[in-house]
Length: 64
Image (cartoon, rainbow, N blue to C red; front, side, top):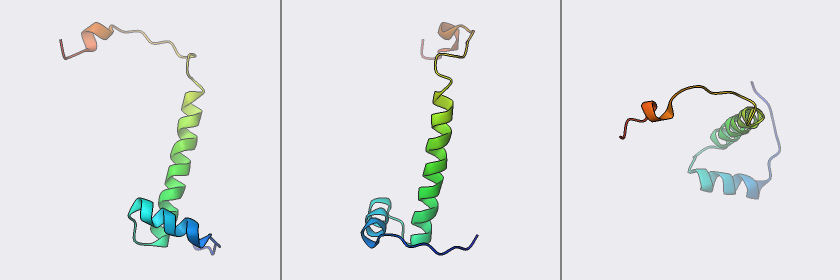
């Protein structure tokens, strides 16, 4: 998808420096991927303490 956006120059420079990416497009795409990943993790965290697990942890461990 093509779009035009106005991004703060200092923010973009910081993002490029921190990420080591060479292009603005790359920085924006990585930022969007990170946003999606973090939102997915937030959704998964909502299940904390609500799921039941059955199994034998001692049997599953391979570093006996």
